[in-house]
Amino acid sequence: MGLSDPEIQLKVRSFLQELTHSAVTLTGLKKLSGGAIQENWALDLQVEAGDWAGFHELVLRCDAPTGVSASHGRADEYQLLKIARGAGVQVPTPCFLCQDVTVLGRPFFLMHRLKGTAAGHLLTKQAAQPGLMKTLGVNLARIHSIDPERQGLAFLGRPPANPIDHTLDLYRHYLDAIGACRPAIEFGLAWLQRNAPGTGRMTLCHRDYRTGNLMIDGDHLTGILDWEFAGWGNPMEDIGWFVAKCWRFGAPHREAGGLGDREPFYQAYERQAGLKIDRSEVAYWEVMAHVRWATIACQQADRHFSGAENSLELALTAYIVPELEYEILMMTEHG
Image (cartoon, rainbow, N blue to C red; front, side, top):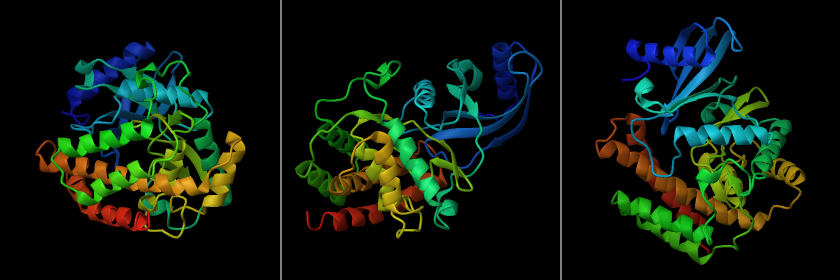
């Protein structure tokens, strides 16, 4: 059962009436596209009285029927949004968290709906204005200002002593768990092990900061979405992920997310963070990005082919794995 079920809608409305101490009307209910790991619903809310009196355009975010191992639960993602917002990061405003599974059958939270689009294939049709690239750099630097001493993120644990070894071991485990035999990915993992840079500083990493998770309205960033993979890591990981070729959505010549050039993005990040990006190290993290996405793509495909979740989108994800493997081999050819 989902939000299209009238009985579920009644339970959600009752939950909201309890929280707002007012009569509530739900309108404009619609399942949103995207969100292969989580499920998102547009939800319009009319609250009759109290502090929340008025009309609100919200998104209800809950778990999909199946997921991948590294994804946070909704309570943790809700807390991440609150912490990021407090650090000046542009995110949707988190509103309510519900961990009572009798309401929807799974935990969920509500956040304000943002204007714009996150669809990569639309955003990369033309080059972004330099102002947008600067905003993206500033916001990523603000995320990386959150360190392991920040209160409220104990659920992330402490950073491992050797983060890269830990990460590569996880990817091997994920592949083994689904019985995937992918020699090119294994080669990439070995290359990453041999060429690993120093540990570097540890900060909060979004771990999915890319075109497709950036809500953009015209030339303005309205919010950064999908925090379910966030964790402690080397901030270069996020930079490599954003500029990786696999996230340029048909615009490979615009190396910063298919939106623009790297340098305006790098320079804005450096000014906000007060430190220099090692351009040569970014190449390592671009290889890591392709290995990681190839591993996740294998997991996503397995969710369909194992019979756990019947989804054409998940099935088609399997077809991008060979392309990612080719890029891994090309990038490591002279390693």
